[in-house]
Image (cartoon, rainbow, N blue to C red; front, side):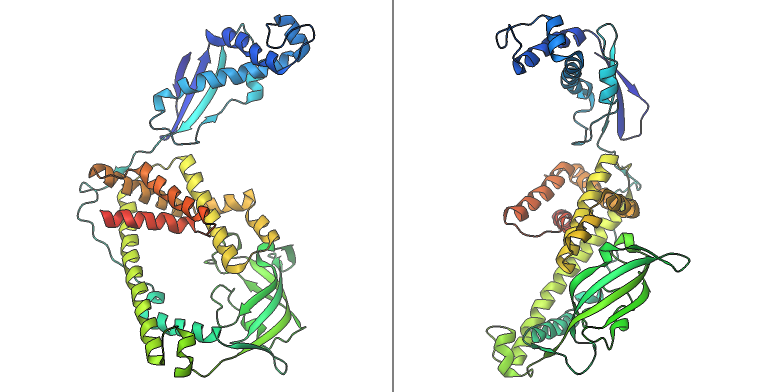
Length: 435
């Protein structure tokens, strides 16, 4: 077999394979499994059958296709042997169409096909010091402030002890819980209504009006005074920073139906409620103290994670990597799948919304819009792997990926929901602390 390397991208090896000597031999050998799968009249099972009779009974195309498959099985490992140690898993692509190979089949000519494979990228450090003497600035989100988090948690526990009462004599106000049917259509540039937006629609949607962080700006304000049985229609625009990429900047006409409206009847917040708010407590002071202590632990963890994230972010800026197509696709699809799981858990997406968000078009739109972020995460993972390799530590880039896979398997084994993006981040953070 002759192998020729063609010009290719830095991480994409393109090989031309020419098969000569084994061609007719494989053609002859291919007939054996074909004969075994057919009962040809006049011949015992698995016994040799003359070629002309076999071709007449089975058909030349079937024999040719089987021969092409046999050639590929036999020659692909040899063709990829030179890059076996660098090839990325599941990145092999036979560029020549199978139909073209079968149609050009002839024992009198050279059998030729092209194959490509992505290989592990080279990590190039942009600084002579590489990762040495690294300095970072850590920014802490306000949400992890222990004092504020404790107040929010106490309020959440208090609300959980309240009773829901039907609102009968007024419209919706902040603090109520409302059940809605939501419909949405895009608005074109000329102001006319366009197509429906399934991912923005929901029936029986439960909205706690005190927790509206995920709503489109102006949505809640458009519902103030809303009464059961009433329908309202209003235009809004999704912000450019909206978490669902396909809706960023989209103008939409919302039609909302109020199905049910409730208010919470909350018990008085005194010592008699302490044990219900937090088992084991007898006074409100104990409740507040213990909740604050837990929030301080969360704050400490958040600071550690923010520090790790800052280090990872800086490491990603210190390396230059040509990210292979296969690695980009794999990482991007994993992140998108994790994002869908998160949306489903938070918003309880219905089947139509899941189908819309799972389409190939939606996935590709996500990959393109998040290309910079996906490449950044890959560079961080590769940089960490290089540090372990340079310092002769136990974990390599491959082990880093394996650790993520093992963590995911644990979640699957116990049927627990998981966010693959968070798992990757946590594994990276553990390795950073190990350093």
